[in-house]
Amino acid sequence: MGTHYEYKRKAQIAVIAITVLTSLALIALLVALIYYCYKRIKVHHRRENQSHAGHNGESDLAKLQVVADNGLQVFTYKQLHSATNGFSKSNVIGRGGFGLVYRGLLYSGGNVVIKFMDEAQKQGEEEFKTEVELLGQLRCPSLLKLIGYCTDNNHKLLVYEFMANGSLQEHLYPISNSFVTPMKLDWNTRLRIALEAAKGLEYLHEHVNPPVIHRDFKSSNILSDKQFHAKVSDFGLAKHGSDKAGGHVSTRVLGTHGYVAPEYALTGHLTTKSDVYSYGVVLLELLTGRVPVDMERPPGEGVLVSWALPLLNDRVNVAKIMDPALEGQHSMKEVIQVAAIAAQCVQPGADYRPLMADVVQSLAPLVKKTHRPQGNNLKGW
Ligand SMILES: Nc1ncnc2c1ncn2[C@@H]1O[C@H](COP(=O)(O)OP(=O)(O)OP(=O)(O)O)[C@@H](O)[C@H]1O
Ligand SMILES: [Mg+2]
Image (cartoon, rainbow, N blue to C red):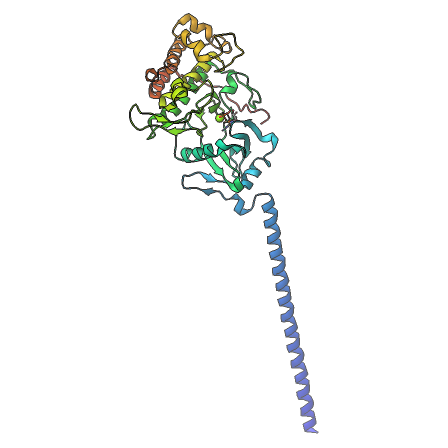
């Protein structure tokens, strides 16, 4: 009887033990299953977030900008695509020899200008390389800042600081497809622009060794910010000059019609004095408000230099050729001084032209530290 009771008690204990162990095993299994499901959901959410952010170009990776050896930022195509609303038409602010020019807003908040190289452009490849290699090394407040570039998928794009008042050319005379509201530039503003642009060239010629010759100095390559602070842009055609005093480098003649120095056009011999000639043409544009070459004008007036040069040394004649937009609100004494500098710069003989350092010295005392026009004149921005 006692043995039977003992057996029954042991069987009950075994059943309880098995039940407890099975329950524990089930609970452990359930916990493992819940943990597995939780992990799966978390991974799924992370993937979903990443792919969503990737679509908007805003993943952590997309925000990163690589900095190249020369201090320039290397952008991905995606970053510049989202900075310009997918290179939308409404972001286009110009078109030049390199291709379309867009305004963009970087993820970091900075306003920039993005130049997108036309794929059909052969010369563009060279210009892209020169611009990146040269501007990466140069630091001067009178030169337009290159922020970075992109070479993704064979696309070539350059990213610059944004200049709210566009190019000088757009304010001097009407040009087609301008995205800037032209402003009447008063005499003091013209003088200040002339001085700042001269400082940019002086830096290239005298503070870089061997000197850099811009080769495409013109009014469309002088850009102004909100306060009409001017900077020289577009170094795609720039070339290192000879490091020997009085030396020259021989090169293919490139540049813009109406701005190219006669000896360079004839012989291909390039010196810093070729830029001084182009600078003189810009001074004539500032004085007269005329285009360098306009064959629609009466005979003898089509080429600005040929028409103006014989008139520059005579007070009465200078008064006659002044830009009517100035409405006579300028000091004739200053005008005569600037006309004399312009006449020296466009001398047919390169040796008779001044150094840019001389030009800066002559212009600096004329520039008054007065109020300048303000405003962002880009239409629709
Ligand atoms: N950094 C900038 N900030 C504001 N506007 C700019 C900037 N760079 C260019 N632009 C605008 O885009 C226009 C076209 O510029 P781009 O330099 O491509 O051609 P261009 O100077 O007119 O001619 P070229 O190709 O012969 O040099 C300029 O006239 C100017 O209005
Ligand atoms: Mg330009």
